[in-house]
Length: 285
Image (cartoon, one colour):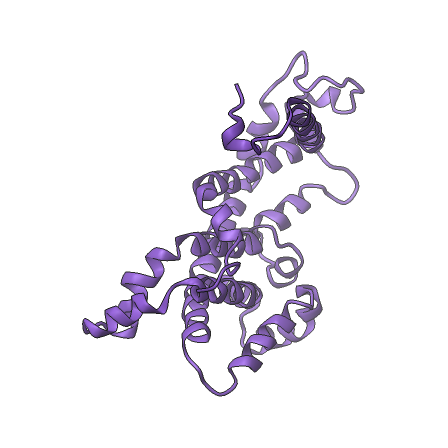
């Protein structure tokens, strides 16, 4: 039973409510069908790959494609590499963004406005546009084909957006809270750690998720920088499964579904913070 007081306005009619739910269900089905189709391909035997049946679960469904994806490819290695790189990108990117965002929010210094505008302007250019200068820099630093060489551009791409988001959230925190802590003898780092960061959990969650996804789903930069088979990330590895002339689409689909599991777990873990995090900076003191 739908609680109108919780989800709708008091004067909303049942026709309006039913219409809204109908539209939501239709668009949900449109969104889910491609994913269910991938699941269907992953469950089909090899000789039924190009079946024209619309059934989501094939009559003779099998998990053989999942077995091949796990044990007959380097999927677990790619998964480990992506988890390491994405996690480090999130940790380093959020740490840098916290310090920068707090400084831009609370302190006045020369170049403050120019610095914020510079961060904003960098978001106008796609990451592949920076491939040539990054490639030259990494070659000279001898960081090609290394995780560190991949972390540098990933962190550089994620930090500007994160700084803007955290700066907007810090602006909404009353300065009186920090002033009280300063009176009690706290230093700047203690105020950040004990007062500001606990209040900023929604913003930290959404910036962590953004930084993680920046590295998790990125292909172009990783394809250029990484060349060793044991260092490939998931997007590059999955593309390599396609082959030059043919592809095992059942195995490919199974691997793609396995790849989505960590992201789904992360979204579910942070879901309670996402709404608050997406509205950061909307209100000021």
